[in-house]
Amino acid sequence: QVQLVESGGGLVQPGGSLTLSCIASENIFKTFSMAWYRQVPGQEREWVATTQNSVNLFADSVEGRFTISRDDAKNTIYLQMNSLQPEDTALYFCTSKGFWGQGTQVTVSS
Image (tube, rainbow, N blue to C red; front, side, top):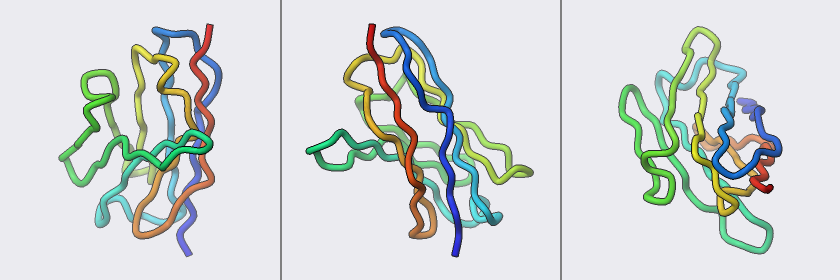
């Protein structure tokens, strides 16, 4: 059973930045892709980004504002979010190898 733990969410003003972390209990990110999703209550879960090896893909809604980095020694993948807007407000999840984390809340508001 792989555990994924997200952290780094919080309240930020429009135009601000946050960096989310996804830590895996096992070294899976070298073998399996990892994706970020977000969800607003009452709406479908929305794909945000996927990373596998050195290939990163982003949804059009975040392209150019979000980036991904990783620390394989720490089994951690980061989602750097810049120029945040109120529409980025959501619960952000990471998923890999069929496992999901519990999510971290991002709220963008003035």
